[in-house]
Length: 79
Image 1 (cartoon, rainbow, N blue to C red):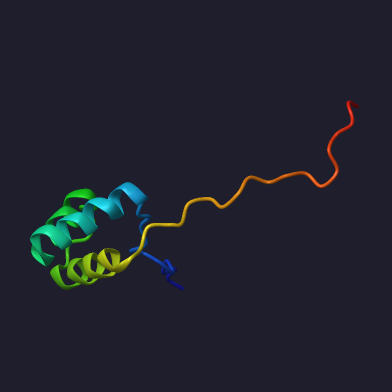
Image 2 (spheres, rainbow, N blue to C red; image 1 turned 60 degrees about the vertical axis):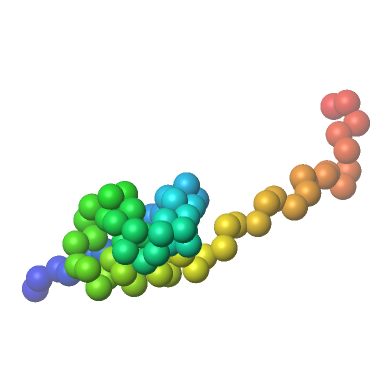
């Protein structure tokens, strides 16, 4: 039986990578975004896959800032 990985083309995009790809897409167009994506992720070789990934990433919105810090309900009383 041959083992096949379930996600052979999975990769992780940091917020910095996504911002650079979004900027290239919005300022210079899809081709520039594809070039930026392939520069940062050289494993994406197929042109159609790179275009789809660039379009998807360009459509992402930055993650919202953290709301408020966690406040303990029962403050420590000097233990």
